[in-house]
Image 1 (cartoon, helix red, strand yellow):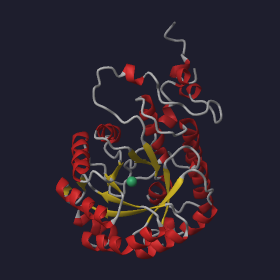
Image 2 (tube, helix red, strand yellow; image 1 turned 60 degrees about the vertical axis):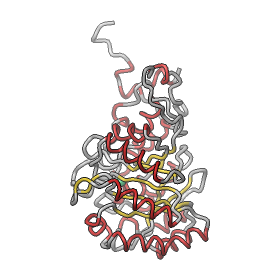
Image 3 (spheres, rainbow, N blue to C red; image 1 turned 45 degrees about the vertical axis):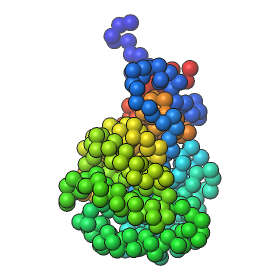
Image 4 (cartoon, helix red, strand yellow; image 1 turned 180 degrees about the vertical axis):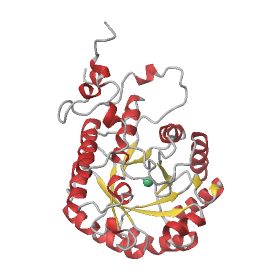
Length: 343
Ligand code: MG
């Protein structure tokens, strides 16, 4: 073949099927063979939490119309995601982007995908439960400075608000996740002591949180740190489910993802298209992209249950609807092995 003859594999547009073209791209069956010599055990299946509609949109500067949010969520339902973080029940003055949370929850299609909502206190928990959320997400920072900057209260006050909210969630039979933000690094305090993170996680677990998520909120984590913190957390709290919320602010998102996999994490947050910036680094990339993450996991032979083709279509449609370029890379490059995946 002449170097001038283009191969379809090198044409990103030819390599990505249109909607409905191919169905779900399965994890690569040959990944174990291709990865011969890699003796670190990886989970065969993980769960994906799509945080774009809440965490992603919340970090955009302008208000996104309610119908765009509803349209996005309705397209995401049924793609095989474990859950969608759809809304936040916070004060509309604090987070104007989420002021339409109830309206969204009334309009979205209820299907096989669970809906998670962020709650900051008892009042938010009441509203979220009334709106029919399937799971709640409570956030506290690992550092005092960040908690005060982000939530205007101390860590102890945040944990007291969690304690105040838990009886409502438990009474309703709705699980509460605790997300510990800046768990790896803090823009104000720098490196975060892992024992501090594990202590906050223990407090959350004692209060009844069955899932603890560690967030690299400003993209300061490195793979070695991610691996060790999750191993330490699992050893300290073997009964809780652990999750990770990674950002790609400094390009380490995918490497940190592999480190978390190797440490046994099986619940992964990500945002469609990489939607959402980093509030402490204007212009920088924020959340890792869901379709980039799912693409890589499937190439590694790790199943997610997510329909990658339709996820990519949805990310492209979102980019068009928002009119801003998204940072996800598979939406531009196309999948690596589209032709072989389609047989
Ligand atoms: Mg985030």
